[in-house]
Amino acid sequence: MCFCPVGFPIVLIAWLAIALLPLGPLSAQQIGTTFYDEEQTLIKEVYGIQNGIPHGSYEVFNELGERVQVGALVNGKKEGVFVHYFPGTSDTLRILTYRKNQREGEALTFHRDGSIAQRALFQNDQLTGESVSYYADGSIRNRTQFRENLPDGAFESFYQNGVSAEKSRFLAGLMHGEQLKYSEEGTLAERNQYIKGQRAGPQVTYYADGQVSSEIHYRKGVKHGLSKSFFRDGLIEKSGRFKNGVPHGGFSTFFEDGKLAEKATYKNGKPRGQIISYYENGEVFRVHHHNAKGFRTLSETFDEEGKKVQTAPYLDGLLHGDTVTYFPDGQIRERIPYQYGQLHGKYERFTDLGELYIERSYLRGRQTREKIHN
Image (cartoon, rainbow, N blue to C red; front, side, top):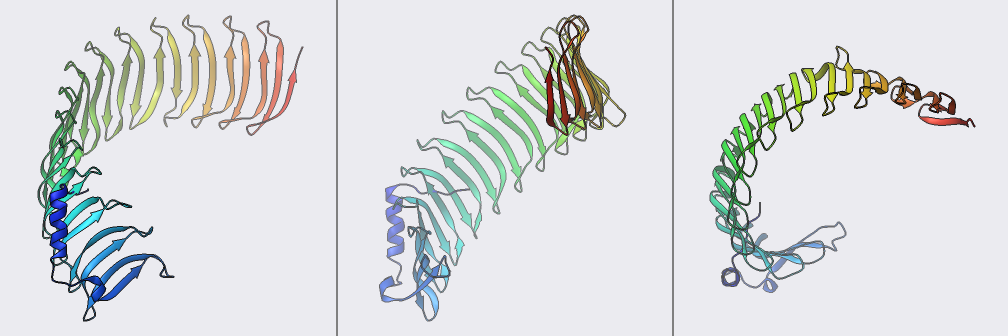
């Protein structure tokens, strides 16, 4: 999270605050220096020393030698106003105030153009109260309540046009309670419930006209219970149930006219039996067969007239054996050999007259031979 400055008057006041500290110029003091490298060529910090203790002006540089922070130390501790700069410039990035090495009071962060990017408040080195972030044009980006360095209380974010984008609440850094999300036009887009950072209850999304787009139930942060999505006219698009975050029970998918597009059954996240997909005319498009462990054993594909297009056997979920494709009259078009998911064995392609046209040999995914028959 960033914190930002206010504009020229505040920056000037910050400089005066540093300049008026009765610490004496850095050139008149004993100087302490830290480095980024062992060769001590890249300066990291330069600070005054008094009675062997860091005391006086304090500067920080990046590895390019650019000054990125100025402030003051009193008896080894940060004290007063500290100004941070955008690298390579003298433009203020952030202004913080320290009391005995702890951040205290208002903190400001700035955009490149000098406008405020964020206002925040520190107490005993911890964020407290309201933090407000801004767009470069001065409009509010978000408001967050803090307590003991954590978001706690109301949060609201806005689009640049001023319309609310999100409303929610936090408890000790965790989202807690209702979360509402809105479109840039101001219509409700999503509604969620949280309990100590975890989704709980229904998540409901909406179309722009207010019609429900989906409703998904959660428990302890994972999907649990009924899950549905809808077409714009209110007809169901998908429906199924989850148990502890995984599919469990029957699942159905529909076309926009209400006809069944796919049906499946799951147990503890694994498919059971057949997953059947359909064409819009009601004919079966594809059937995936599964064993008791949820592994696919066979896949069958059909055309819109119900004629078989392909069969593909599986072992432990991997293509294994000959995948066979067919011409519309039922004759074999191809035999494609697989072994544990890799091409392996003899491949054959036939003409529509049933004559062998191409032969290939494969060894563990690599083609080793090809013969074309004229």
